[in-house]
Length: 574
Image (cartoon, rainbow, N blue to C red; front, side, top):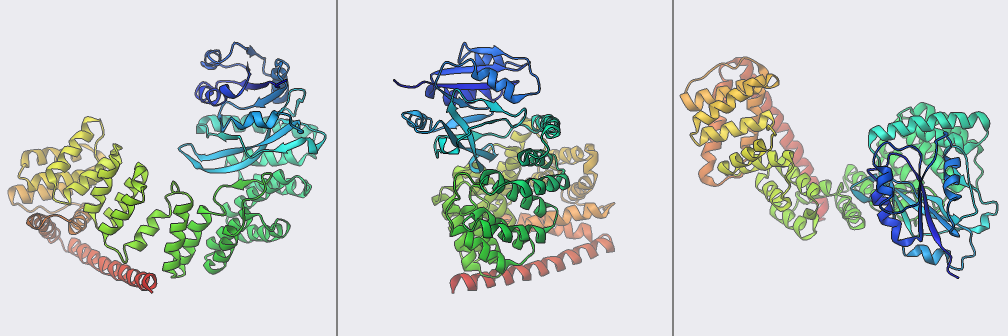
């Protein structure tokens, strides 16, 4: 006879998450039982769209009691337990686990997402969520299913439970509730290392790192070696605390000590590499990261951060190699990081900078197109910002046109790139669209806009934008910079700027003009703006000194950039 499977849940005010959870699991189970512990939102009405077995339970600050009440309501032989902010993937594997199984319970992998929009960045835990219905939960907080014979517990790779982050306010509320319940539980059983671990994680989430360190140390001193899930999680949380408080040597001592106990635990070698990297000991860090990528993923029972033996480690290898002047190796590592996880785009920025040392900007743009990176709007906008900063507004414009992103910040950059590629009319239209969507551009963007209007001879509109800056009290220095331009270009009159910050705003505009990539016949327009700025700064000796200092800084930056470029180019082409 086929054994039946029930999804059993307790919920409270989970209207934002419940539908996604139930949709992910409803076709894999024979019965859904939902116990509500006091919702004030639409949780109950959503639950009733999926099952008639929706019950109420008076909350008593005891998670195990509530879950056991829910368990008592099922008639199925097996139970799947989920929280409302979780979804289940690859559900077809559930039936194969429970059919003629020698086990009475299963640990399933839980992927705790770092970012709700990216399912490829997560921490992995193993959690006992699939079990025969005669088992019961224990513990008022961080409740668990107690199985007396460990051999009866199986470890499954599928299905995967995906935990999505909750909003910060709700997360803060849950942590405060959990701390209260954990303190109460510790009064009853102060020797339980797992309670110390859980309390440490809650305080860590609230930023109380010193408190967390004491709790993690206590848990680690008491946890037996066979409790790998808790020991490995405690070790890594403690290393994280040491890193974030600058106690790098203590973190390294822990890495060295525990890597002797867990010689194939890639996460430990990754953490050690990060600590050496923070100490700027890049050569040693390289060796630790290289050790990490040579190791397999740890056993399922180990706490594991995805990517510590692949894309995360390769990214850090690239960073360390670049710091050591090993540019060819750095490029190779960045490429390996992207190959391991194309959605992890952080290596793309330094990779593009390296490519620009020996390839044309157009060739690098073709690389981005053919490698499919523009499929992600966030990447396209980031690359546009990179090319703009590197002095290629035309290539930046191509990136933005590829992404068709409508975010205000990207539209501002789009308008700026249009202007500095000689497409002033297009830039003005883009900013008009932005305002029609009730977003006022940043002050420096408005200065670009005023410059475009002045070059087009649209003096009345330019004057309106100038006085628009005056009405923003925080933009008075930008107003004076724009007003000086307007007076000179529209009326051929020089004014003396009232503040060094206004002069600095004009210097920034001059710098943007020098990076323009417009057609030859538009070059004279940008030269005209730069000439006007020079005349305005010449009205006071201290402003002229600002201009000289700015030119000296640009000269030094150019020399540094050329030194880096030629060093990288020599290494990449050797």
